[in-house]
Length: 220
Ligand SMILES: Nc1ncnc2c1ncn2[C@@H]1O[C@H](COP(=O)(O)OP(=O)(O)OP(=O)(O)O)[C@@H](O)[C@H]1O
Ligand SMILES: [Mg+2]
View (cartoon, rainbow, N blue to C red):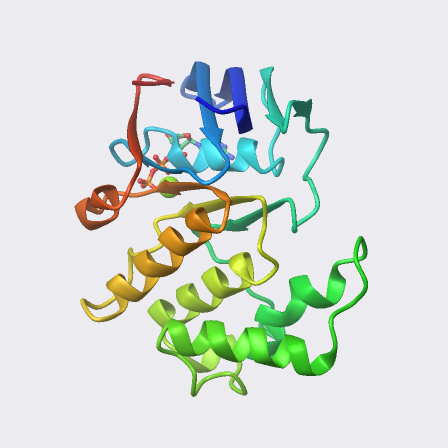
């Protein structure tokens, strides 16, 4: 495989609980190259979301490390390097849908800020592509959960991140919206992102370059 964009080495994560600690990850290894789309399956509670939280630096492993382009991460990397569609979405409810999607473009400080016109065009294109082009001026709580989920996906991809992590991106979608999401995920990989998708959905596994399964704290 080409040099991995994202690498997890020996990840261990245990969550303490009064009725007995839960050891979710037990020396997990993963390598994903730029341009590769990898799906992660595994039963509910197997640790898929816990893994994504470690990969994006929202959480820290008890031991092991996560490397981006060969460099260990310390905390959450900048959003243009690693962006996330979390299972719990995490939209800013006080911002409109268009403002949520524009946020990564407005906050990015490593390159000259895009013009308002370019930001508007990028946001409109993404919302249109995901079938929610008419919702830009609404607030997240004024639309359905499946629509909010597509907003959070648009926000994750708007800044063309090097690594894209998505947690159950089709979980709340109707049959018409799923192909739109799958096309967008595929395109992100084709444009060079390392894409990881945690999912129970066979339709998503079908578009993967590689499928891994999380079982007993390791991937196979
Ligand atoms: N912050 C936490 N504190 C304590 N336990 C946690 C925490 N986060 C996750 N867990 C436990 O870790 C295990 C894995 O949870 P996780 O959410 O990663 O599962 P999942 O594979 O994403 O499930 P699903 O398919 O339902 O989304 C569960 O047993 C859960 O209770
Ligand atoms: Mg989960």
